[in-house]
Amino acid sequence: MARIRKIEIENFRSIQRLVWLPSPGINCLIGPGDSGKSSILDAIDYCVGARRNILFTDADFHRLEVENPIRISVTVGELDDALKNIDAYGLYVRGFDAASGEIEDEPEKEAETVLTMRLTVTSDLEPSWSLVSERAEAQEQVRNLNWADRVRLAPTRIGVMADYHLGWSRSSVLNRISEERADASAALAKAARDARAAFGDDAQNQLGETLTIVAATAKELGIPVGDNIRAMLDAHSVSFAGGTISLHDDSGVPLRGLGTGSARLLIAGLQRKAAAKSTVLLVDETEHGLEPHRIIRFLGSLGAKEERPPLQVFMTTHSPVVLRELSGQQLFVVRRAKDKHEVRNVGTGDDIQSTIRLYPDAFLAPSVLVCEGASEVGLVRGVDHFRTAQGQKSISACGVALVDCGGGDADRCFRRADAFQALGYRVAVLRDDDVKPTPAAETAFVAAGGKVIAWGADCALEDDLFVSVTDDCVNKLIERAVELHGEELVNEHIKSASRGERDLEKIRTAFLFDGYSVEHRVLLGEASRTRKAGWFKSVSWMESVGHDIVGPDLAKAEVEFATTIEEIFKWAGDGG
Image 1 (tube, rainbow, N blue to C red):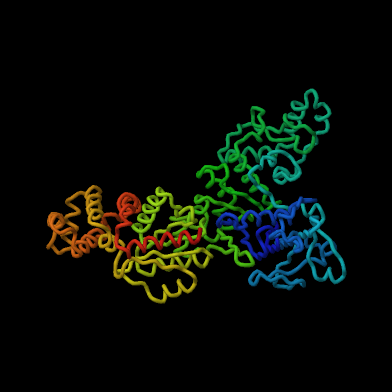
Image 2 (cartoon, rainbow, N blue to C red):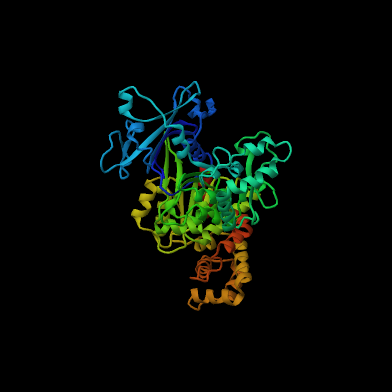
């Protein structure tokens, strides 16, 4: 059945212009708030949904500029024979080149046959739908799809309130999973007395196939509706319309009473069963009402893990769980540029895919700070907590996500940062300076708008830390290391770093007479970052150090170190 090949939006809400070639499978839109994700779903729904009218206001026009019409065009491929009928739509069929994304008015042999539907809204706020064709315009002909074809093409939408799909209303998914239709006229005539019971008996025969599919789907998804699901007249219905007939569990309780998550999960499963008739699904806030394990089940019911996706899904999310479950090929970042919107595929590169698994929240923030290791992440978080307690704006409130690059070669953090930068994120790198990155890698990153923040010359974080803070702070750092690892291990690290010339006792004794010398500070910095056994080389260890020890000491620390810390938070604040 049909798949959307191209979406073009002009002057709709926050979107001045957008051209996007979506995937035929899962299209999960991510990005910061107010980037236009939900507006894209609305645009699809308004353009190709089975609607006779939509209430528009001036607020739907980009920047309230009502003199610039709203235009939403959706090009649909994989057309069935009825939609390629020459007599009905011969003037309107077009050719789509998937490689270039171009659409030719005259279908070419190698191109896919498509139809383009357009919704136009002018200052009078009246929506107008039509098929797009230069040939038809030249002949002064205008037409839309037949209503029956519009109904067949219309996407199914699962919004926050989607329980109308659990009754046989006109746009319900229940009308798409089989050809069965109920004739409720006889039962409705007796509605004042025994309509529910009378129709319940008839419905088991008229809707048996549909009820079997619903029961099986609910069982597959672990939704408790009982073994004998029934169709009965809705006890709360006022008018006897299509929605009067709704699903009930085996106790006669309407399934409209299911929790939001259960209802959405069941509807998604039913949409999968209806894929032969309706292949396009719109899902607002995928995670709404669902626990993490049911989010995974929800995505599975949409075919997210299947090589040949049964549905074309357009969804929005702010959930890290959704990002972890999907591949980079299924994720699309929505970005607002100066005069247009862009939708960029995250991709499946090794650096990107591993980052999605480890730090999915980074893809949900407007700014990303790529840290060379866990120590940097922990220190920034700890100092941030300290600053927040002093009344300063937190780094998370500035829209910054922290990413641990995991160490490795000096260029690794730039490869990860480049991947975010290519997707339109605002990115900075916080790196050590003991091992220099390739000059070209850093230069290219900065030239593309990135920010580089480095510890002191030739220093790793621990080196700069021990050299820069006060004697009191060094004492507290040593005490914390002993508390975490024991005095014996800390002593062995110091002896190893000094080639046996110093130990913990000698350093403590020297401090009592002259304080911590530069030599001993350098030695402690080296000892503290012992490979694979560093004193504070974990996010939680360094976070507590940052909050309890470093944060309170910063005002008295060496200016260069304090300035580096301040530079991190200034960059964060500039984006928030």
